[in-house]
Image (cartoon, rainbow, N blue to C red; front, side, top):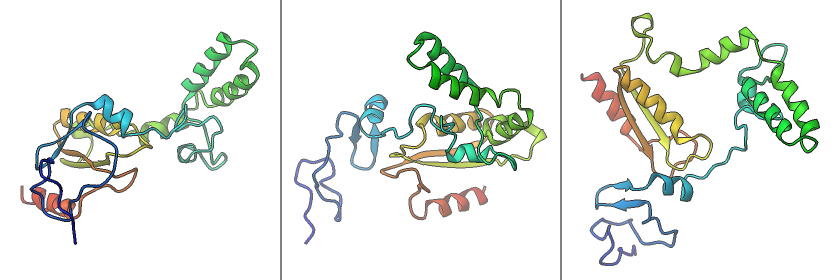
Length: 205
């Protein structure tokens, strides 16, 4: 037997399998109007729900061992640093705290400095960045419609990454269907059947 939500809850009129279960109180940043949820505080949503997993330097790691370091590698160097600005930041830390980090920072600084001025690497980085092509206009055969879905519980990538891409595409005149998918992590986040519905919709335009 499926227990119905108690009278007085925001979802009392919804049919089973909705049920009351123990969990963290989300009312500080989430509201429910009976048909859909709305994030009412972006700061509290990020602090209390959208946890962070990546350490400092994130994708271009100090140990040069991330998947992204592999993406920008070449035949001779399967893993490569790709953001020399991290080396510059490390150098500033070493100068601010001499003796405390200088030896270790010097090692990392040299590793990042080694890729500075690498034109072929800069070309690969530019090719990989979609923001370089959102305003290409007639010089590129760009799609007219974009569907972007991101897990609301994604801890691998900042919320601003996908949102910035969606906004840039919209500003360039493209039709963008952007949304967060509730409780999904860093994955192929979508609701069943909605992608097919979207394809049918744009094909009928």
